[in-house]
Image (tube, rainbow, N blue to C red; front, top):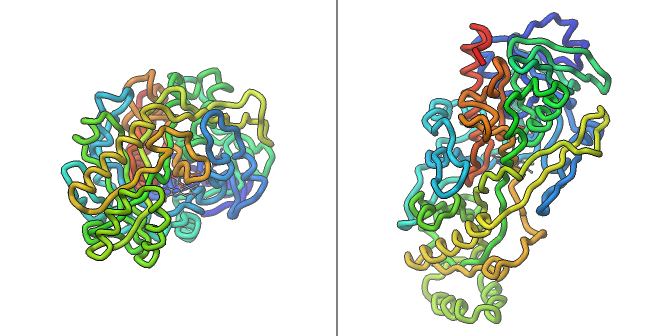
Length: 484
Ligand SMILES: Cc1cc2nc3c(=O)[nH]c(=O)nc-3n(C[C@H](O)[C@H](O)[C@H](O)COP(=O)(O)OP(=O)(O)OC[C@H]3O[C@@H](n4cnc5c(N)ncnc54)[C@H](O)[C@@H]3O)c2cc1C
């Protein structure tokens, strides 16, 4: 069922067991699983059926620290959320991403990859993915892996009809949750605002916050402030340990053995280090993306490079007549260390149209980001040359520790952390079941629960974790709230 506002929904008399806030990939995945378990749920969606300037304005905010995207450009606030403009690159976090890295503080999850594996078939159904190809070792230090470029699923388009027809899922558009009401043990209600005006409260036995990787922290911080700690009673980590995937073009390459690269249909190939290689250099996870350029571009590329790096050009010229197949741009994206000071905070001065403080995002890369990038591309270049796959030239700014460029990709639009999963109340917000510590009936879905980010795009793992949460709630929601 789809309702256009809170009044329409109320008139229906529908009584949900679970109230889900947000209709992006996380919220819809939880709802699908609940419906499969025959648990009635409502999804409250702040935005409309399409983009509106008024709704999107709520996402404006300030960034303090490193250069980052405008906060109203890096996400979308309407039915389907940011899936309305995501690119569709898919990959699940690796098993080792869930394990602690002894040389980096606050790494490790309370669950393992085995806990989400049972949900990967359904994740592929939801995201329209083919089975992932197995990784392939290309050297002692590196594996080729598939970053699957899917036809990006727009959750609004794919699920509008199934949601409209479902007797167990009520989607309510134009209805935002201003705040959750809690007493430090349980949530009793969500305060609603529909079509811009206050619309009373909605009670339910269970609540799931699924408003995106920045907004989950904002909604919980604001609700907690308004209820004097009644929504997140253990709030030391709330908003903190926020992470992105920094992304930069870090060099160029000349490729001799294109077959070994296993380029995908768009001419990209992805490589990631082994756990042992990361540990030996005490760096975090990363990937190198080789973006190949067609052979006809190679000669010009070499001519352009000749005056910059004569030694590389000499090697290239030797190889040209022999086996040289193409040249390439090298991009890197990496896992950031979870740092307490990288955080979503509430602005002390700026508020949105509903009077709710806007986000002030504090985000800064540090020495470990820098080392992961430089050591990573050095390792890759060495492995590449040892196997005689080609040669890598590292960009000057990377090698010389120059300023972070502002005219490149910068990051992935991946908003992770802020309500991270863990067992330690001082460094995490939710437990292994995605339940807020100390609360009987409040859960969080989305990449804000990521304890660490790994190197790959987040939405496949978000979907798998949300299906797992829906499965869990499908069982407990019929039995009643669990003990906090
Ligand atoms: C340009 C771009 C490209 C991307 N490409 C990729 C990619 O290739 N691969 C990948 O894995 N990821 C990619 N992402 C990230 C991906 O879009 C997100 O990981 C994903 O959408 C997160 O899903 P979500 O459901 O957690 O949050 P969202 O998609 O942000 O959905 C949250 C929903 O909650 C609603 N909402 C917010 N506040 C409230 C409130 N108070 N009350 C009610 N409703 C509310 C919003 O309107 C929205 O519908 C990309 C992102 C961008 C911006």
